[in-house]
Length: 119
Image (cartoon, rainbow, N blue to C red; front, side, top):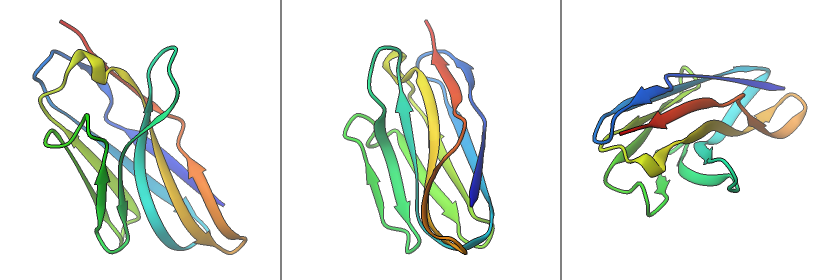
């Protein structure tokens, strides 16, 4: 079982920056991929960015050039540095992991952290 704990959300004005962090714990053998998803009110959850254990990244077109995902494999953490934030980035951001555990392959989600960009 994997537990994901996010931190770093908050309020920011357009053009500002925030950094989200997520730490994974539990009976983890190896984390394959970690990522961030977001869900705005009335919308479906969508991918923001993912990163593999080898460092390969994937970004939603809407955040390319503004957001940067990074991870520390030794600490089982993933971060999302967000800059040039827009009102439309407002959402609950969820950390995600795909990991091999003592119980097999598991996909896990954090509880979410709110990011609000207001003018």
